[in-house]
Length: 209
Image (cartoon, rainbow, N blue to C red; front, side):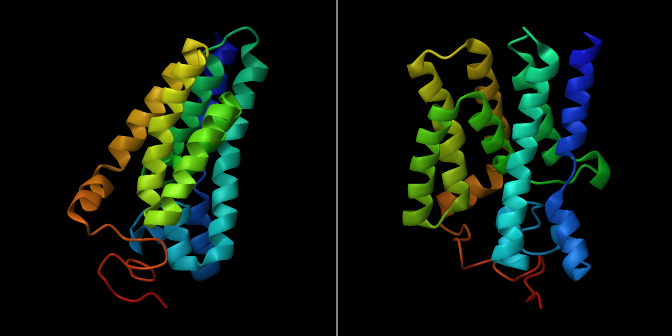
């Protein structure tokens, strides 16, 4: 029980490392949560810092999820539920980071790492559909929601183990909750599109230099 608890705590602490916040501070000396959409994630990094930093943040955030799942597998031996719990802990750390006053991102990149590690093919199928939706609509938030909603559906259809299904369902619930403002904006038709809208603006609407 000690090793399982240790794995979950370490996964949360790993998830709490906000690469978006760190990179923005390093490159521009700013708190990225005060610029663009105010979100500490890859999409807002793209708006505020550009493509290169955004890709780096995306990759690192995904790797947080991958590392957490494999930590759970390594320390959990026969415990099927531990990799999923470690993945959830990493997502919670990303969303509510201990090191940054519990103000983080929305956890999608880390969720991609978690789900790709737990169930690669269902996550891949959901990811392809999500990417296509982003290409056609330019709504990253919509693509993110499609990804987390479709993954548990594909898991159920494929007959995957219940611990993985429940993990994916909890990830879906987390994501919907974190995207509740985006959902409202999508319904109203004023959600920012990729490459336009909120790019380069801080929370007060001013242009970021």
